Length: 201
Image 1 (cartoon, rainbow, N blue to C red):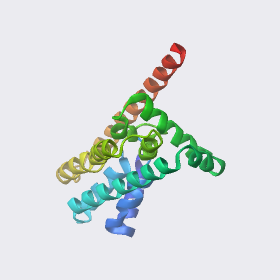
Image 2 (image 1 turned 180 degrees about the vertical axis):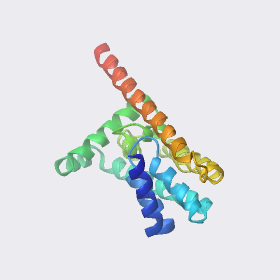
Image 3 (image 1 turned 60 degrees about the vertical axis):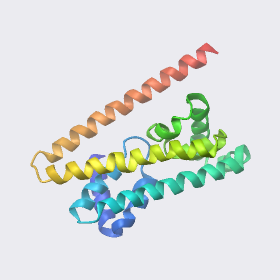
Image 4 (image 1 turned 90 degrees about the vertical axis):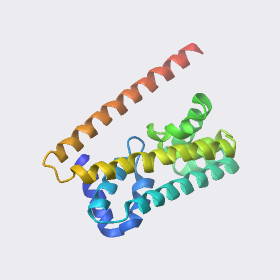
């Protein structure tokens, strides 16, 4: 997975330049945004203007989140049912995202994007849960900023200093391994917590 992520990011930089931001952020699944991390690393090596890419990424991810928020807010449950008839997995993700917003509070707009299934659909979940637009916009901006700038800027700054070091691939691999373990631990914790809440009912 690590090798595939680096190869894909390198291909996207070569093919799309700055516009590689779009597939990287919108296709990348929930969890640590590794595709974005690799893209920023290769963008710096390719001498692209990384601050512009960070701003571009923030704008793209924000537009996507806001678009699906309004779509879900206006479409509601009938929209989910309609999507479910054609794309069952997407409908399940939308429902899980809505449940996460209702069950765990507004901060899920910020951090839900890093959880499995909920992932990229936090905007739709907030819309289905009828979160007010002002609150959604604030907490979504925090989440989008954390993904694009919070992961991207340190990657660029640190990558510039250590990318040519012989131990750099091992450092990336170790970070990937640690983040994977943490993600699995979060999944297990979420499943256990959901089971406890269900048993309490």
